[in-house]
Length: 335
View 1 (cartoon, rainbow, N blue to C red):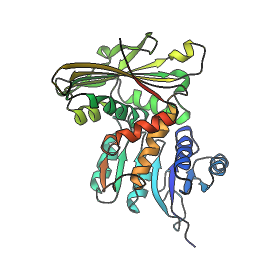
View 2 (cartoon, rainbow, N blue to C red):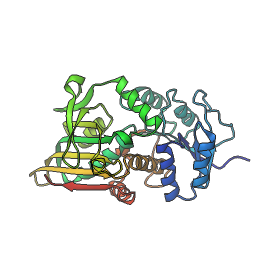
View 3 (cartoon, rainbow, N blue to C red):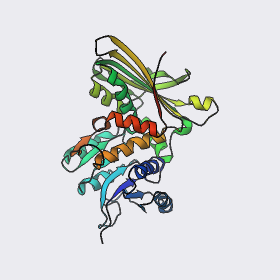
View 4 (tube, rainbow, N blue to C red):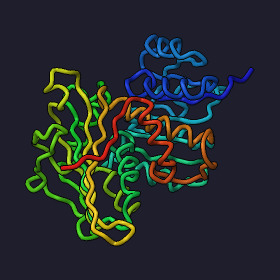
């Protein structure tokens, strides 16, 4: 007897994977899920809590992931760093949609090339953006008030107590080792900024300035090319969030500054804040779950084979509603 097809969540017992599975279960109670982790007992606990789910261990050194040949899946989701790209190969060999979040801008080339070489196999969603692309989607929602955008500046505060589990911390270390330079779009040109020139200050939601750095991140090309803005940058500070300064748990903060013109040609400058009191985990999981929905055809038009990024797939009204549903606060603020 063949197993019913399920979404294979690699790293499904980790923070991002487990939270993603929880959202998918809430939205789609009958959707089969497979929680894949290194610790089978831990993965089984997540599966048992979800219902309509099973648990497996996988071997990232093997093309078949160490899974039985009779096992079938509907999609593969990599919420961990898969340095051999075995999950991508497994998905392509079987014509399955694939989503990844951990490659980052500096590690994306092998993933893109592997996807391009077999572009007709299945849709591939590259979501190695900040919070798996949710910051990009929030920015594009704010950008709908503009006719032309000249400048986009994002400032993220990642609380040091909210950097994620072991996998998330390893990703941050790997990205910082690969490059300390920042990437911006300046006057229409994508430009690398040396570490010595990339230092900046990131304002927290309570006005406190935190030391930060201009970073090289996929959000920059995604937003630049989606909006046509000639000037785009992403600043990141890792430190104490405003909520912790108030004696509360760590939160996550994203400030979105836009400048351009409105529909009448009048200059327009806006500032938005995206905040979640429980940190970046819920927002990252939301972005992943939204991607899985689209790849499986559970919402919207079918996604064709090829390489995709989050901003190309989602309805912004739907995303905004889902953000509110999970407790995010997304608001326009005045100086």
